[in-house]
Image (cartoon, rainbow, N blue to C red):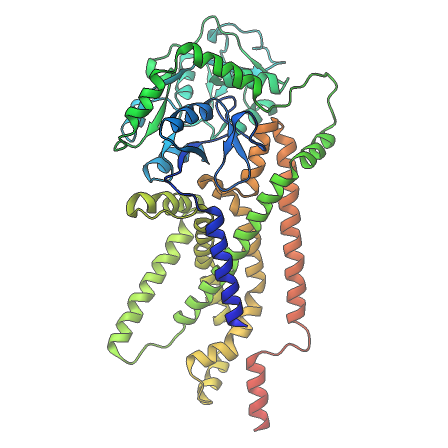
Length: 521
């Protein structure tokens, strides 16, 4: 049976690598959010010249994608979009996860310190987006926004432009446009600074939004409004990129942008009759269930494997930490060194957030050691070692909860430490820690959402993609919340059933068996 299970696991892993592997020589790997229409967006088909997104069955399109195709044709390659959060684009590039950033990025002085930039492939015009029913809907100058609560995306020049508005109530920058639009629709902010193509998209997709036509707008510098391709500083292909962009005239740029605005997959509201909230929730579920189902499957895969592997790590550490000190001096020294390393591991992974661990392990290892991890395997590894750090302390508490007399009785019967742990202690520990293990499982289901920072296509990531496609944020995240609740509720009920099974009269631990044998003797 063990051989069959090992063969099955090996076969599955082999299939996984075959399915996810992509020859780097055949593809130009381009990083972008695929959630910033009309520059880039996610869609379900390859219509209108869309290209595949790595690790998914979805496709990316938009102005940035079409520019990437022009560059890839020059290099005799095909475009493969690596969907990446905005804050992860530069780390992904410098660590070798992607070949280029084509995501509406401006070549600011700060970014030039880390990466190189090509010539411009578009010049943006900053503007403001407000609620269509707000008092600023008919504003024509930034001077009219006194007292308005305004924000922009984190890490972009647009956020710094807010300071030009006298008396503005500048809000904290937000991670992506889905958060910003959600905040605007909810009334948490009064406006956000954006670029004109995105503002037009927001206005056409959602009647609650309006792009402000500014006659007196923001003062900008050329490096801010210019959009260029980001590349590694040692990448000699920048000359080829610049050659392509030099032939891409301003007239062609405007024509391409107009075409992308027209073809972007947003649901335009042409009727004043608005469906009820629950009808919109149901429509989102019906129209996007394959995408949400894939995300749910990935969340379950990562959380299940992470919990199982993490529990195994916890059990191994627990057994080691309760082992008696070795008689041999050399072994005793190694035992102490290993104990110190284990303590360091536990303190680090219990003392740092999983989102930080994800960035360090996925991008940091690639940049420092050239270790190019598959993002799904990296996610399983991250959740596993994080869970292992917590489970080791839970197991330690479970071992200490076993009566000391049972250890003494086992020693008197000639049991070794390993035999004592395997036949007497661990059966009781597993039962004792079952509620805590279930709790870790539930936490892992929810915590997989932070893995979107390394662009793992789990449930939250899939839901966020749907929200950026439909512009229905509250409705989409209501669906996501319901799915998370169903998962955690089901897992909790299953674990309760397992606990009851352990608590039946037929369940006997190794300790009870040993005591029965002693009485018979």
